[in-house]
Image 1 (cartoon, rainbow over the protein chains, first blue to last red):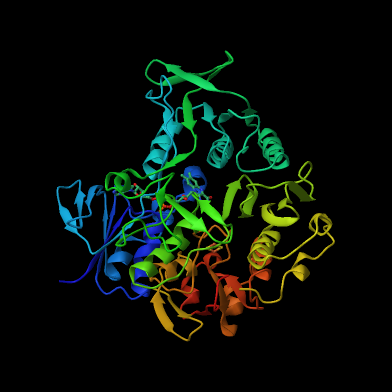
Image 2 (image 1 turned 180 degrees about the horizontal axis):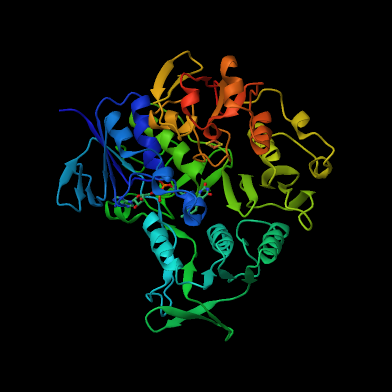
Length: 410
Length: 106
Ligand SMILES: Cc1cc2nc3c(=O)[nH]c(=O)nc-3n(C[C@H](O)[C@H](O)[C@H](O)COP(=O)(O)OP(=O)(O)OC[C@H]3O[C@@H](n4cnc5c(N)ncnc54)[C@H](O)[C@@H]3O)c2cc1C
Ligand code: FES
């Protein structure tokens, strides 16, 4: 019988892992099971162009269902794996079938973190993680005037930007003292607060939400400090949790994500994992990470595919991320955790184009580039090459950064 | 349906039918061509869908936008005929278009 590889989860990681298996020379069959109803789709547009209505479902599919079939990949949307038996090497599916595997890949991603708020089950209260979530939000928009978004992270702010542009009254309630507190420096938070305010969004910080109120549909949001806000639509963006349930039940090592090595291998030598669900080492950064980004999912998936084919291609790259809000394209190179200095290039107070460089002991860690695509590209190269640059050079618009980066990197 | 010819850095050639309206990047992704990564899925945010447009086609394909141009300038090996393939929309006029893929997208 032919070898079989089963991929559990059909998101970004799976959509890369399956074709990469073919490219790495996998001769057996490939079966992908995904709990969502659609073939793998691009998740970032959910809070951007898809919510805005400028892209349709077909336009956000990573590729159409037929493309998988054409390349001999059996993709089963709408099927959830409910258990893994590592002794008999079978996966139990919710359609009653059990499927044997030789190799297994876990690409289960993550889920929106649920807030145990009274009233969270009222109509008009939504999370934003899946296509189905966004379709439910869109179905509500026709009779929505006032939106409250709980959580001022990237997804919350992107959603605010889209709904404001659609003409709704939008308020963002953030628990911390500033939006994006976990991920950016104060000047960048201040910048996004300014722009959202200019666009007519109200941002309130240090607001701990305690309850949602309403009869059938939500009508108000109550905060710990006694304040309350009218709302006919509430969107909760309170972060995510890696989806480790199956791995845990199967006895794989789990610790803030499925624990894998730099080859994406779990504690079972026939099982790899890739994407949001993993806790993996990064030798460039000299520590373990769990990341929530598309590039992480796709690159780790390639490593995982190589591993399943008996090759060794360690996964080690500098993280990057992007976020679109209004007319602003934010591109982030690197991870800023542990920075001790922030250097600005450009004017975040009066313009919509600047870079915030993050340094630690004079070494570049990361760069937030707002409408600065060229600096973003160069920042990636500087990180890859370990380029040294002084704060003065980074801040000075007249210094050509390209000259600092080696000629033909990569 | 317009046919696009992708030539990888190692010389491997793929003749692919790509529906009008799709991007040149999407044609490569649908057909699992290795040389285009497209990490951002066409959001013009990653420049990992870089390609070189065949000299005979440069005019028909047209120039990049400002953002795209800035990204291209900072790719590992930019050339005059560089484009981000996610920003090239396939039309009937582009039937026969030849694009070459760089050795590496990083
Ligand atoms: C609104 C939004 C905006 C975002 N914007 C950006 C952005 O701009 N840039 C960026 O880099 N990243 C962004 N992200 C993050 C990015 O989408 C994720 O990092 C990425 O989707 C991770 O891919 P994945 O394959 O690991 O997981 P997922 O895409 O979450 O896919 C996992 C899939 O597995 C399925 N699954 C789980 N368990 C099972 C099971 N037992 N059986 C079958 N199927 C199962 C799930 O239903 C899901 O479909 C955004 C995320 C969201 C929600
Ligand atoms: S796919 Fe990312 S820029 Fe083209």
